Structure formats: structure tokens, C-alpha cells
Amino acid sequence: MENKRILVVGGTGYIGQSLVSCLLRYNYEVSLLLRRKAKNDLNKINYYFGDVLHKKTLYEAAKNIDAVIYLASVIRTWNKKKYQENSAGLRNMIDVMKERGVKKLIYFSSINAAIEQTGNYGDSKKACEKIVMNSRLDYMIVRPNYVYGIDKRNDFYKFYSLIKKIHIFPIIGNGENKFEPINKDDVSELIVKLLKNWQSKKLIYLSGKQKISLNGFAGMIKKISNKKFISVHFPIRSLQPFKKILPLDLDGIDQDRVAQGETLYGGADIKEDLQKIIKLI
Image (cartoon, rainbow, N blue to C red; front, side, top):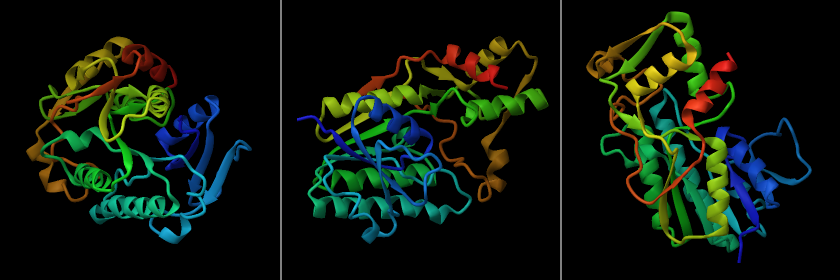
């Protein structure tokens, strides 16, 4: 039986907004957990106010639900202790699901969880994956690669805006590390595919169809934009003194972020999408 009644936790975030829109297009009954009033209320969505860190606020949202899609996460912060909220909130949601009889969970992890030497964010995702695997729920864990959209909110847009001003492409490490960027609309379509073809207790990578190194990415931007800039490499050790104040993990930052197991691939072309993003500037 297809899972038609979906509770999305973290549905107002970057990926979540795209996912909710996609679910509605496929006529899913969508419930959304919010910490505050949404800017754009849609009549088709069931809104519930709650916070995953406060378990008692979750019960109403979890009534009459077939599956939960859990995206809520602390991603970037200077306060490293904040990452502990990732596992605390997930535990609360799982407890409430069990009490409400909701058995199916899609948990959004990260490609960072596949990296051996990672930092606080990746470690928090590894811990959350273990919580899900030990939950006795009928789960799927997805590990999206770097997710972007054709908008001004993605890091590609912000990064190119910086490059355009300073004429420098900053690269941490030697730049040979590879990643598989995926369009957020592809992520949403793949999640719908998983809902329609449920695979119990699976760990699935979500990746773009092209594998590219950071150096290759710099070259691609230079060619697309027809702008002159130079790539400047910063050794990781040169940034170590600032490790505690940087809003990103230096641990594992120069490692490949590529799928290492069962993978669903998006169809978007990164070069074509970059052209669209650059035109927004």
C-alpha cells in the first residue's frame, strides 16, 4: 500500500520546501511540523506547531500518518554543542512515532556520514543513523550529496558572487576531492519514488549524475562565466588555528564526497544549472 499521508519534519528548510511542493504535486496528504507560523500558508497542508526538542509538542502532528520524512537538522554553527540537538530531536520523534503507531520513516542523513574522518556535523549524522537503525521502525536512510537549486539561496550562487568581487577562487586543500552535486528538485522526485516503491531498512545515496573535482568545478565556472580569476589553494593546516571559530568542519574537508553504495541519481546537468545560477547574479 502506498504511503499517502506524510508528516514532513523540517519542511520549511532549503530541501524541505522543494519536497513539500513535490509531494503536493503528486497528491500526497502533507502535514508540516512548524516551530513558528509559516510565511505562506497553503490550504492543502495540515500545519502543526511543535519542536522536536520538546516531545509533548509532537503528538498531535503524528496522528493518522503513514510515514514521516525527517529533514530537521543543525547543519552549520559555531556552537559545536548544538549538533547534539540532531540526535535529541530525532529520538523524540521516534518515540512519538512508536506511541502513535507510525512505522515508516525516511531519515535525511548526509554524504558527510560516509566520510571516515569527518567533523561535528558528520559525526552527528553518523550517530543519528545508528539511532534510526536501532529504532525497530521500517526505515530508509538517504544520504544526499551536495544539494543546490536554481536560486539565490544555494552556496554556488553565494560562492560565485564572492569570486566575482575578489577575482579569486579559494580552495581548501589540493582541490582534487570530488563530489556529486544534485539539484534539490531531483532529490524531491527521488523521495517520491522511494515512497511509491518502499525498500525497508535501506541506506541509499542521492547523487547528481556528474562527478566533479573542486578544481574541475573552478574550471567549469571560469568557462561558463567567461570571467578571469585565479584559483588559490589554502593548506588545511593554515586554517587549523581558526578551527574553533569557523562555521564549517575542517576534518575531512579535502576528502571525496561520492556515493559508496546503492544510489539513486538525479537527471539535472550541473553545467546547465550553473549557467542558470550565474545568470541570477
